[in-house]
Length: 245
Image 1 (cartoon, one colour):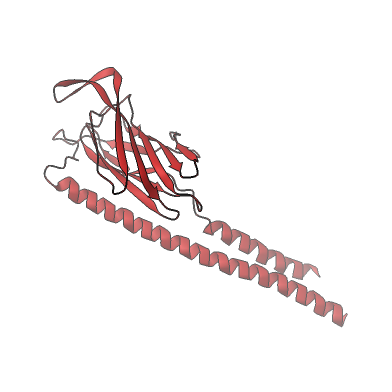
Image 2 (cartoon, one colour):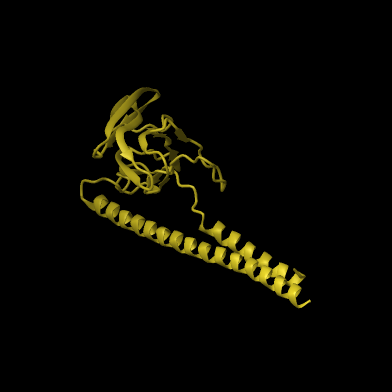
């Protein structure tokens, strides 16, 4: 096989590998939605848990709540098929909430008894507050347990632009609203509408991501075909040259 044929075959193979790399999905992890809310008030958060395994189901989620910036109120929304347990603990430094001195606060939420099957995800909503107004973010370390006893620890807090291998869900806190409620109280129904709009945006983004993944996989198949065609062409051309030579 001459040099030209080898180059054609090599280009086809490299194309297939490159396109396959584009089609490989990024590692999903436990996340919190919305990703940012005003500080100083109340908010409803959704912990989104995707199942990353092909042969096991997620059967437990544990979310550790921050104790350096504790929240006096934590109210999980019932999730069909899941049992919820909220643990409390004594605070090293008591906090004031609505004129009351709080010495104990929720420290952990556990969902168990349900099942997140391969290829699916589940959201776990929680109403929390009062959010701190003296920090720009809080981290919720998470443990994801599968029915094969595997435990994935999403506990690494991102620093700077570096994305850790097992990042913890992080909630960014913006400037508190002028009314002192953080702009996320549910009493007037506004937060519910905003949450629905955010949810629609999240679902649209997920649909877009799904479409992108499908396109990438199709391109991956095209790349493989091009690589195989390049190799086949190189072999055939070499045989013809040998026959005519």
